[in-house]
Image 1 (cartoon, one colour):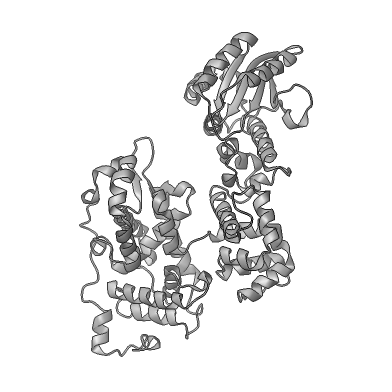
Image 2: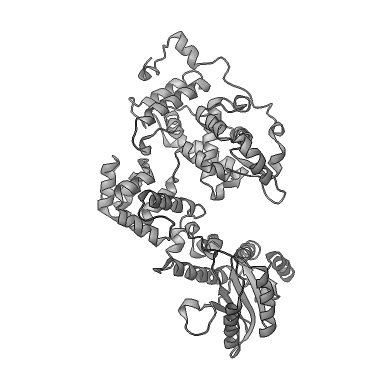
Amino acid sequence: MELRELVDRDWNSYERKRFIKDDTKTKTDAFDPEAFKHDGFSDRQAYLETYVPALAEETRLKQELNNFTPPRVSAINDSPYQALVIRYGILRQLIQQPDYSTEKSDLKDAVQDWQRDLIESYDGDSFPDSDDLLHLAQAAVDYKNQVDDSELHMVYSYFELHNRSQDNKRDYYTWLDFFKRLSAIGRFPKVSRSDSPEHALDTIEKGIWSLQEQALVYEINDPEYDELVGIPDDYIDVVQDWLYYEMSDDNFRRMLETLDVFDRRDVLIEARDQFDVTGKNYGKNVNRRENIVEAGVYPSELLKEVVPKDDLKAIVDEYALDAHKLKTDEMVAAIIEYFEQSQKSVEDDEPAVDLFLDAYEDIADGAVTDVPPQVQGLVDADNPEEKLDVLFEDATAEIFREVFNLNQTNQLGQQASGVVADGEIEQDGKWLLWDNKRRRDQFRLGSDARSKIKNYIDTKDQQHDVEWFLIIAPGFTENAVANAENLERQTGTDIRLVPASSLKRLAELWRTEYGESDRTLPLSTFYGSGLFETDRAADWLESQFA
């Protein structure tokens, strides 16, 4: 039987028998999540160390992902086809989340939205009648919108044959392509069109349990947090390969908008010709970029085929990416990873203070690949190390001014000459100085640093009363605490060691509890010695504003 004949309603009986099973639906009412639990579900570390290696052993994982015979799937979902849709949707959502985790309630909503968006995006005119995959989708749902394992194997086998004959990944078929065709013919999971969204979420919940049982996602039950799910780091590459996933469309658009090379008309025209990109652009580069994304061009293919090597080197240099500049594939992979990973917590049109706050810990420890290009673009510096130093100072000053409403914040550091700290704040005649210490390891507050800080304080004390000196760094050694206490005895000034994570937590707390008013953070929040602890500061603030 030829593929193009599959849509024919008058199949031979043996063909109909092969494609249609008598019992393809199983009710979910009897599903018991507790039956799927094992000890590791309550202990993430034990789960990853003990259960994941066994459940996600390479040959089993390959079998489950590629041959689509997941255990118990027919018993906990409306059909194997429904299970596949849920599996794909959950994995696709998870792989795009910051740190590959998200609250379960948000995940369930996101998967349902993902299904609905597909339905709304495609209609009967989306694909030509000659489209083989459209024929396959029509054949697979010929009888009462039900699909069984044999259909999934049939579709997967067609993918394999088709993809082996293609030179570029952008021409591969994925399950998303199959779902698009199903949407075009009005045949998508029943729950997506249900009048009862709760039923859809209930079904997705069962899909999550199915994935957990296969160790593709983990769950953490912690009384302090909502339930979390995520993909173990060891298996992210496997899942990405299965999804043929490189970068979300939104991040792809941001990358094209951000990189100067894609402002060049000649590069965009070459991309259009190279990848057979269609769509009207009206002579505007913004439309040309949008057409590239809509055409499903893979970012890796685009960067390798149309971006000159010198431009790739310039991008790697601009964002301080870790890549060998003689190896095109390494540069391309680093650029894609940077724009995908760094964008995950960035929303469009975020104000500078929000960008700084989101990336504050990454700026502090110098993890440049996690600092979004929007943040890097806020500082003009040729040297990446200098850029991050300035970003750390700028971010700290912005948080003091915009989050804590400390309008008397004066940034010094790069803008001043002489013996000065990175910044100063005056409140009620008392002064706070701070110094940023960006590094990849913990700050130890050695003798040179203590000498400089003492000079900062002594110089300022000649004019004003310095009450507090904050040292802000990713973390501190035990010696740093002892050294800070010695320095405090020498200067008579409170020396506070403030981890970047603690300042960020304090900022988030202030916004949540006190930020809606015009209140100003009392600098007395930093009274004390040694390591600054946000929890103690929170208790003190509560007593002040009760």
